[in-house]
Length: 169
Image 1: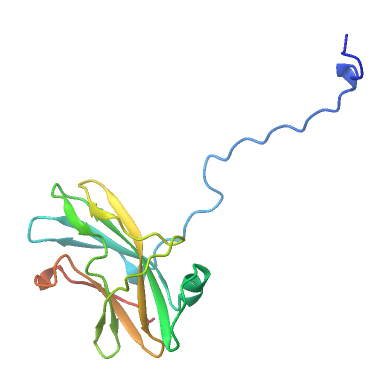
Image 2 (image 1 turned 90 degrees about the horizontal axis):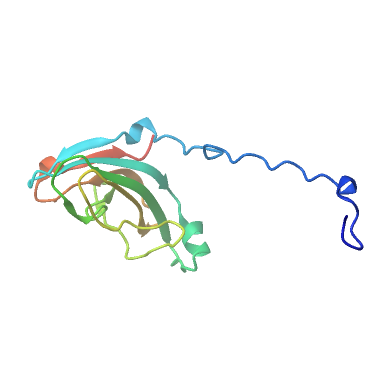
């Protein structure tokens, strides 16, 4: 018998069925553009890495201002999302984007800014064998700069480790 003030169980409204949890996320990230295809490189210590450019946000000013960063007049933000997979047996110790640079149409190389954006996390230090790391790199460049590409290398003094991707196109 129901407790005082409660309707009998037969009169209780039915609850809607609980939908099953999806087995996959509702959307998958877009695959990298073919112009940013993964590239393999072997370093001087035997590092075997696969580097991929996943996304380039140019301009990325809004991302920085939304995070509370104040852009200087005449300045433009460019954010690059990349990944480094260590397919070998030798650890890669540096930060994954240590030697990632932008290249202008005048062949000038522009380094990363010392800026972190919580919504677009930076690389951690190192990539262990069998692991992949990814992160966002922030560049603050003159707003009128024409970009031609990206370059990444294990060490600049080993030119055989330099990888390049076009930006324009």
